[in-house]
Length: 179
Image 1 (cartoon, rainbow, N blue to C red):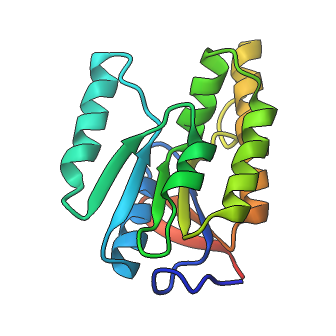
Image 2 (image 1 turned 90 degrees about the vertical axis):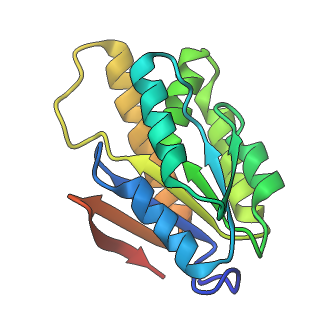
């Protein structure tokens, strides 16, 4: 089911990939090719100098096409408020959102449920970016395993809702779902 919003963008697109796979850049290009402007919802928080540098690099790459909002713990609210037919919304990234929830010791299922509802009711296209963390080693700690499991479940849920799912490896897209 494709959305009539913003050119050829479906209502919900999920872009998955590993670290530094090119998934954020690819997601940005999807929106840039289909609309005259977009909203970038950042979930990252600069907890240290290295993360601050990553955030700065992402900001520098984006030009005036993008309006940026920060919602490290409020993705459902951002979707409800910001996704419009003429300004698609990019959520970057679900994995950091999950990490933020877990570090804040907030229960993830109510947040996931609210996000699913917001996606179903979104007024315009939403492109979501997430890391595929289940392809590596089994984490050594219970928290690491809980995080990996929750990320996998979240990705499966969003992929189930999505009209299009794209996996990025080495900067190359592989379409997993296009309905």
